[in-house]
Length: 118
Length: 112
Image (cartoon, rainbow over all chains, first blue to last red):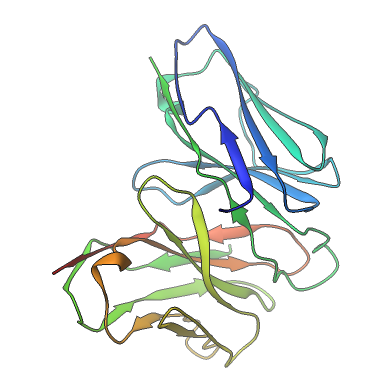
């Protein structure tokens, strides 16, 4: 039980579809993250939200659009994706507020959404 | 720039063998260091961490020591079990940010 849930667990979409990934954390955390995990590549940080404000956008293409309506929910809206966007998308949360000192927080991950773009 | 380098996998061991997975890092300042583990079909979970030089993190029989002089954080376990089969990620946390920088991961396969 990680306290971070993601839906759906699997998603197959065409390049012209629009879909959304959802992440919810039940840990009372203030920071939430989207990562992309592709085979044989390091885990890629995509976005960071702290207290609902985006604090990091790691040069992610605009076909990925995040939304953080509150500290417990994080969405990733997808449109006109490419086959190379197929990957496991992981959401994580952490207590947050690390911007003023050493980064010692543990990040808690959800199980991921396996996305296949046809 | 800041980065983490892990040994290539897979690492294949027999049950009760000794495990070492190497991790070295490049970072400015004083990062924190982490090992995360990913079991099949799951997200990553923290295995252990160390927040300053010479600290030793330990959990479930795994250990890693933060060596600033060699910029390393190697993961060790004295006797692995089949249930330890997973992918292990080394990561560093940069001061003044929420970001973690991960290595590519090392797959461990333990056979009975």
